[in-house]
Length: 138
Image 1 (cartoon, rainbow, N blue to C red):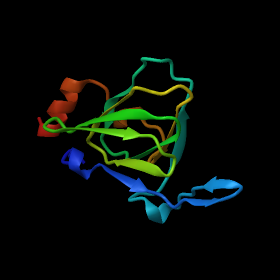
Image 2 (image 1 turned 90 degrees about the vertical axis):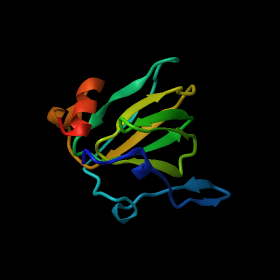
Image 3 (image 1 turned 180 degrees about the vertical axis):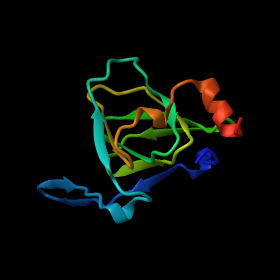
């Protein structure tokens, strides 16, 4: 989906149920614009570190701050958008074709990721200049 743009990236509020025993949020596939094929999470990210720095050709991404907070810089080679994730019942949908950088992790932050594909290195674009060429269709 090389034609995706940052305006296709959106924050989705998930259901949250709270009572005296605490809160619970659950995610079902019908709430996302893709089927979940893989889940991974980042934690113990050292202060000042950045993650991401790549784009995907096919993979949809749904990113949640399960704990703490972090910033997500989105770039479609023309427009940029910055999103702060800091609540565990909100997630950011990132379609394929978006350059993503994650930074400004708070202490104890957990970055939970639900994605549409199994790991496939050939789906990654890891060089920004290659990403720009991909977006214009070479």
